[in-house]
Image 1 (cartoon, rainbow, N blue to C red):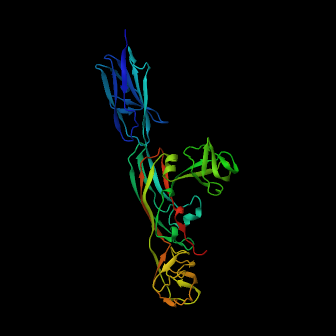
Image 2 (cartoon, rainbow, N blue to C red; image 1 turned 60 degrees about the horizontal axis):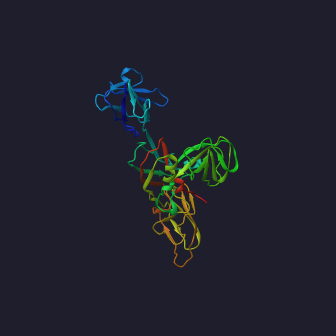
Length: 420
């Protein structure tokens, strides 16, 4: 007796999203062909579960309702599988087995295909003030991290850009040692932040001590790519500014020789969208990221004469928080010629203190003695107590695990000082 033939079995095998979705299994063949369908949910390390064709849910116990026994009464048969929502992702195995006196057209004994369900992952967007590299840097800010992290959750199969608006505020510490302000490049109060200042990092463990060598063996090199930077060691210190130049198996070649003990953790950073995508599999882009310092003022505490002859000048003020050496000040009767308004020393105080001009260039014919009176407002140019950071992150593709997208503040913010 000739066997009945199942000519095709069709189901959409594309990755499932993390939300629930229904898909149809279609069996095509000769009338009278018999078959059995199972759908198994493989839950990682947990117990697998089975689709119940009666109540359309997955159950951990198996019974007859988890089998669909069918026979073609026309040229095709179809049934719907209800895949549930799952934020962590899963794998589903689709099994179709020929029944008695039935064969599959391709000669196989069973049709077996897997469907992956994408999970949801989180990208955290955070400011890095450099504490991991230099723990002292945390003292210059009012909090660690300097502002609350943002987060964006998305499906690993997402291809439509997700927009995350960032509005960070970083504030200098209210402290006599660390409260000398935050400075942007070129003493500007507005700085466009390059994409290359953002990074994502991963820590890898050294497998075998390294002695003044550019070759480093790691326990594993997953997610590492050429161009990433070894930013810090959890024991010891990084020499120079090394970059990964080659990866061969679990062996890295660095651009600068290092000495590292066995078992040390190295944090590797991928700076910029290209390296982040290559190493961590997600695609951020950055729109209009700007750091803007808020205007900073203080007021004169006692009448102070800016002399007409060469001299250093100390101006008592009502608070020095946010004021750094190397910056300038303006105000009524302040001489701004040359370095006549360049701050050379700051004596700290929350409500008192002073700023000093270390070399007032008096003596020229156009310079006359002037008094900066009590209460005169001085505008500080070049350092800030508060810097606002704004911009938009577009995430086109989410990674397969949670990661932090860090903005390296040390790339563009310099902490102030009171003396050289």
